[in-house]
Amino acid sequence: MTWTQIYDPMGNLALSAFMAAIPMIIIFYLLAIRRTPGQIAGAAAVTSAVLVAILVYKMPVATALTATGMGAMYGVFPIFWIVITAIFIYNMTVETGQFEIIKNSIASITDDRRLQALLIAFAFGAFLEGAAGFGTPVAISAGMLVGLGFNPLYAAGLCLIANTAPVAFGGIGIPIIVAGQVTGLDTMKISQMVGRQLPFLSVIIPIWLVVLMSGWKSAMEVLPACLVAGISFATVQYLSSNFIGPELPDILSALATIVALTVFLRSWKPAKIWRFADEKAAATATKIPVYSLGTIIKAWSPFIVLTVMVILWGLKPIQAVIDAVSLKILVPGLDKAVMQVAPIAKQSTAMAALYKVNWLSAAGTALFIASIISAAILGVGLSRFCNIFVKTFKQLTKPLITIPCVLGLAYVMNYSGMSSTLGLFLAGTGSFFPFFSAFLGWLGVFLTGSDTSANALFGNLQAVTAQQVGMDPVLAVAANSSGGVTGKMISPQSIAVATAATGLVGKEGDLFNFTVLHSLTLAVMVGLMTYAQAYILTWMIP
Image 1 (cartoon, rainbow, N blue to C red):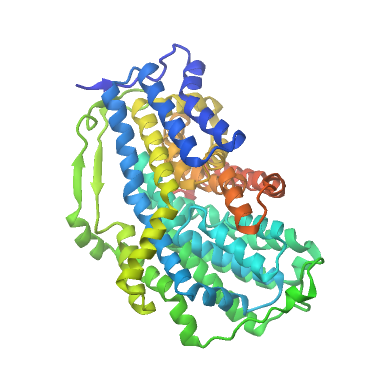
Image 2 (spheres, rainbow, N blue to C red):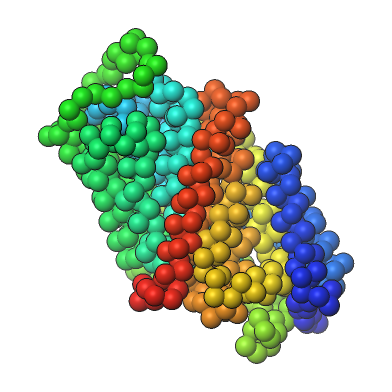
């Protein structure tokens, strides 16, 4: 039996939009005001969404629960599978002592704090965002900077702001992949569009960081290095996102930046070494071990193997072969059980519900194989390998609850028509919607702490609203992701991770004040860029 979506169940679009927004209001209140843990906030929000779908939208109980379950399953596979395998590789480098060598190999390039911030907060943080995401880069990079002698507040704040440029392609491209899944749009086109927005931010972020650290005059002393970092990152980010896909822009851009800066700093040095005014002399005299090239390559080998495997998995000929063994399940009770109607659909359309278990072609599988190869290189035996994996799983028990809850929330909102109601209401902004589409992404990441979750929550809403106002849906969904990255630095989850990594627990308010103005300024920039691309620079839309 087919159930038809209703977009104005209350007979008043504003009131219907309010009812549809209840799950958003709940998650905002729990995360932003009550500072409730993500897994609890996610569970409360998805529960409220199911209740609204059933009681207000009159969605059949079984259909609502099935839609929620399908979203939750996508949260487990392929998304959580990528998260656990990526962090597993990182944990393996830590457990074997190789990560210490990685850290020192970067820190040994320069003892100038401004340049260390570029290498670690900007470049290496982006690499970790690309490989793992979900809070890992800020925690690791901030901890490294504090270990090098940075003021904890600056270490945390700089890493949060630096994490702007890579977030949309974090976790092997998961935010873009999820955006494609929940909207039905071509993932490659979304990747291309985001790759035609974020590089503009990537160029200026290194300068932004150094100005924040040391002031404009001091930043001009290292302007050449800032330009090398920003331009190298932005160039590779654009090329990889437009011609390879969403999985590798962060990893390749970060590696290009690290290499470019390292080579550049061999022949160029700032006129004077800069450190924080309150740094103790002892803290600046830390001796860093000197390693052989072979030792450094071995330490970096897990991430080198990871990059190679992801590249191979993304090649079309290989992808065609390994994707052939996927299990495709038409979800009973949901597939063709929900009917979309005008004005959301041009004609009445039964929504498909296909759950694809691409167990071999999934990016997480590529990472797991990379972990096996890395274990052989690092001499990790089977027993230790299993112990580290179990430890990683225990470390991620809370995300294992949070991610499925947020994906379940997104799916039940989409299948019930709640997202469509909000989209129709937001269409009232008319020609100004391209500007506000970036702020919708900003709000989503502020609430959830994740560009992936924000795309799951608001991706379909963006696409629906874009269709209503005559905006290209690909641009709107891309703006959700690009605008979302500017909200990452002020999300309660990100701030909690940063304060925990730098010993600032209890001073979350200080860190929020440190980043909020930068967050809003960057969000305005993305909004203006999106507006220009919607009406003036339309040739930039793929």
